[in-house]
Length: 480
Image 1 (cartoon, helix red, strand yellow):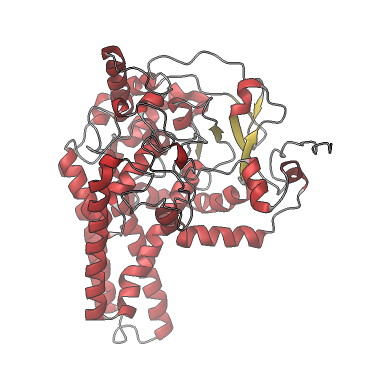
Image 2: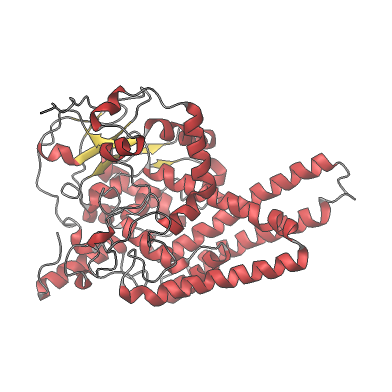
């Protein structure tokens, strides 16, 4: 539903929606406003496009919907107001002292680890070369985890969950993300749009699955042939996963891979002739990218300046200490950070139990429920600040700080009921295994076989590997 009027009533409603969804303060001065969205734009989602947050949508007859596991699925029918009202008021409180203490802790972990390895994992103390190689491998893994913790804290800044002060959030987030070669404001803006369109097949910005038609085109097949295809070999799945986990993050930043590709609809016309992919004009570094609006130009430039500063420092350090040393000290841990970032995001939004929605059937409550909590043990809860374990809550109220998210999650479970999803089996090991499961089970989305009316707008994962609910059997078109 696009903004069609600018009356006081409409403005008041939009303001209440912003407050209900994002909290009392905006994340950034660059955040889109409903009043600035005179018509629908796939690349410029406004809160005015969300379904009503104060009352449940009218009941629809969806018939029998079947998820990938073969379980019957029911569309959520609660409201964002019920979610917010269930959360204790103190969970919304943000503490600068507590937030910065976590920044200090994570930096101390990074510095201490470097000090220990640099001074003691040497030929003098560890004569065996193979042992030193193994220990330095452990170093890159540990620094990757601590670096991911820093990434998550910057993510908190991007949502306004780090501090009640927008300035504190943005200055801190810019420094932390820039140090990890992340374009802070550019990411913040596109990530905000992801939150406002989660699970929407036309407007989501992260890990948007292919439709059956898109999957068929990718494989060079007809739509009706997908249910007849042989299993994808495990080696192909593995190659895809390795590529996703090694270059997926930069592929996303540079080409918008896994984000929507409806840029022609951009309300300012900046998406004309642009599409996802290398050279397509859609990325997180160009102020002219259709991921943003004209007013965002300086935010993108500031993000680029942050990246340029970090690159300059890294080049200087390479000249001072050698590229080989910097490769081990910084670049391999950096690759681990990217791996964890992609894995976490992938598994938050990809699971056999999760639906996606067409534009007609989507609303904010449905989309936020189309996420899943997982369990990553001590690493997830302490080193990664609970980003894996409390993601569902985060999609409903992203300004709640991570240290209050467990309590808030427990508070919303009774409201969500059966619509709350979590996969905590086997803890850390289960999280790693879920990557393979998601890759094998979740290849494209399509409606439940035989769906009619609004049910056609509720899509579930299907695959060609004989796992879970089989793809719908579609008759071949009759030749004329």
